[in-house]
Picture 1: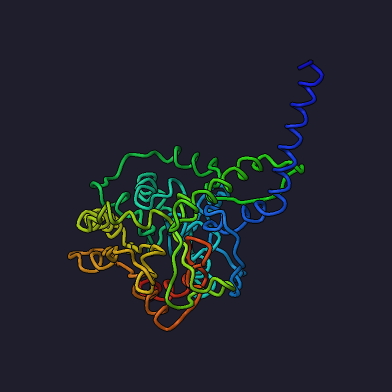
Picture 2: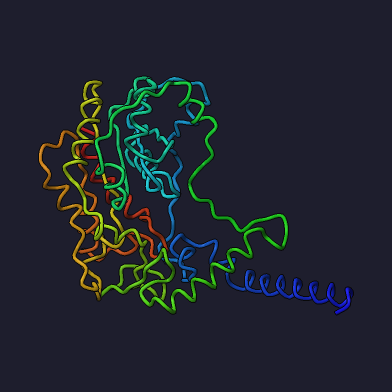
Amino acid sequence: MSTRKYVFSVTLVMYAFMAVNLVLWYGLTREVFGMKDMNRMGGTKTPEALTGNVSYTKHHTELAEYIASGRHESFDVLTLGDSFSNGKNNYQDYLVNRYGLRVINVRIKYHCLEDLYMLLNAGIVDEISPRVVILESVERSVQGRLGMESKFSQDTDRKTIINVLLNQADKSPKISTASAGIFEPVLVKWNITFLFNRLYRFLHPEQLSPEVYITKLDRPFFTNPGHENTLMHYWEDLEYLKNPLNAEMVNQNLNNAARLLKAKGIKLIFFAAADKYDLYYPYLTDKKGRPENPFFKEMREVQGKEYVFVDAMSVLREALARGEQDVYWMGDTHWSWKGIKIVCDEMVKHIIP
């Protein structure tokens, strides 16, 4: 083959490759990429829920914002947690708007207890002087974060924490389809992932991808047209089968933190954001022989709590029993504003006398 023909052939292949990727991206995968996290990770397009989002006129304060402002003031509530505390649906904003509470949120390592100890050692908790501290962790991560070993306060100087807060990038997922050009940087990688997930789905009928499982419920708990009884959930929701909860260790770690806060006149509240699979478990049409996750039962029964345990599962299950739809979003791992309202209305009983 001559040099000219070789160059022509390579160029033709490259243009064909680009053309196929552009057609796939703008025809389908770009839209899926911008959807909720279960849709995105599973590479599947579904209609949006008929239940709309809500917006709030007032908002909580982020600690990074507070530090940067240089102001000094106290707050009613200090919150620390993972994506359920730092995502688009902020339960803190509901507390601000519905109950008039002054709420400040912290995001450092997204580990509720370790972040709390960092703030205590840096003197920041004393500075903002909250009446209540709320620690949150998604159910599936409680064992790894709080149940493996005793967590102890470690020395952290104030300067280090301040620098982290002022310089931290926002670690919460940001999904955007906007770019400066037609051939977006993520295009090829995402197209390959999308096609891989389609093949994975063919080989694993219970899954949309390695990260996402899909199954059916016996009643319509969602308002997404055509998918009212479809449950998509994260693979880690099944990790309880391999890594059972050590409720005694979790309790010990929370009690240690509660004692430190109590000495400062601060109440500790802990809640676990229910795993989607666990929440809807009673309504699965095919449980595949899997037992129910005993997490909440064990946390209810553990003795000697020196903190307030808000049982998110009980109030959410009560809502499902009433037929409430879209407590969690069908295409997402997270709760909706409805789920937030249900849990916060229960939690606030321990905040406002």
